[in-house]
Amino acid sequence: MVDIREQSPLSLAFVGDAVYSLLIRQHFVTSKRYNINVLNKMTVKYVSAHGQFKALELIRELLTEEEAAVAKRGQNASKASVAKNASVAEYRASTGFESLLGYLKLTNQDERIEYLVGYILENLKFE
Image (cartoon, rainbow, N blue to C red):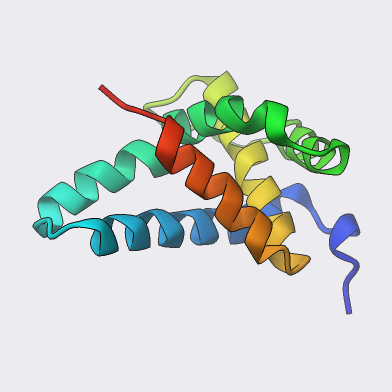
């Protein structure tokens, strides 16, 4: 079995992206009845590179030393391309955020994920 701490940050981000997307979608589907177009628009705000950048900035002070190190490693991972609607800084931070969630998921820290994502949903507002 692979030691998750030695896994590539981009591999962790691959998992973290799916985890975050699912939790955000689940939140909106279970909170109120929305049509699919509204669900998609609301979800994109959170799961976009810009939204994930804002989420990471919001929770940064809540992170343990280990979590911050995982996020920083992900943020510093090299990129072949950048999302068309995001700055380089936003894209890199979003990868760090996804790496963090992937790491937490693969180390079975589901309660921690739920806490952090719950905090984001309560405190991150989009105009």
